Length: 459
Image 1: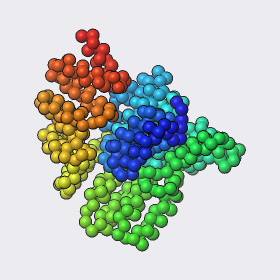
Image 2: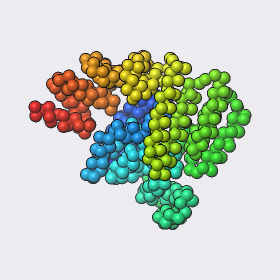
Image 3: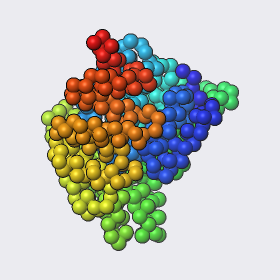
Image 4: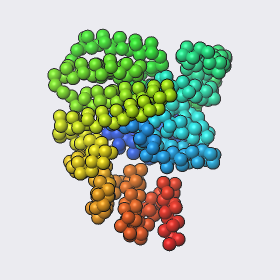
């Protein structure tokens, strides 16, 4: 795989520009679609993957979901990546792992599979890019940080490696491997002018992309790179001064909350957001959503701590608490903001998960009035009708959704495949095969579609 810092072709460059512009506007679904299409054309472009991961993480924070539930629901794809890794098919594994990260970009299982696939594909730079972007959310995940440091060494970036191993050495002073890695990185860094090995213009361009990759897109830190808790503490003090000067500026308070979250000071983050509500002289729906996200992040952090302590039952109970909180919070916010159609869609998902199908249909039917939620709402209405065994109406909803999606993004493949399964349930094998053929011709490796095609032709 050829690694490039920026898009090479004009066509890919146009997709990246559109994707980045949509990211800045907050149109995350469109941004992800454009950047995913760009990755399909030039899988080794670092800039594209950087923007794509930022959009995915931002979307995930807007509507957080349970990592464990996501892993279980996507076990077939997870197993497929494992198989491809065992078969030494790195680039194919990387393609499937990228799809997993689209569903849940902060799922550690998916992140590890993606990194392993990138390394196997001969593209450790791509693994570095993703690990550097997610490390802010796992500042105490020492295996992840060690892996990132080793990748920095592998790609001849001793300064980045040294700085990372210095942090690890402070946290784990008795770990001999970390101390050895620190010694190696320090020696290589001292041998390299400015900490970088000499190289041509192409390597310089690559280094610029890699330095940029460490910037906090999600925490909105501008051009500052957060590397240590001391850095965050300094930024918190700076932000508190700005709030003193401009107490009505909600953005400063939201920024402060994000800083607190980055160092796991969740209660202080929630307090900062509640202060933002007070400063707004009324309730701001975006701040309400941020408070919910912060509380969910706190519960997830507690669950991970319980897992690390070997308390699997406690972690499971904590994640159950997360699910209950998310449902109640969405129900309250839908009542508070009845015209927020995106919120109605999210509440519909929560109801669907709880198997409250009739209530979910009501929320999805209202959500479909939103241009940004219409297709997904139609899809879920179809799924609800399918669960109610109202197959003809489910097929109608699926067909409507398919007709409104341009190209062949993952969502369209999902709906076409489900329509095929629906026709199978209805006993119409011919129409089912027609749907599977559509997916098969654009994505041979999608789920079990190849097997279904083979069975269809055999019969």
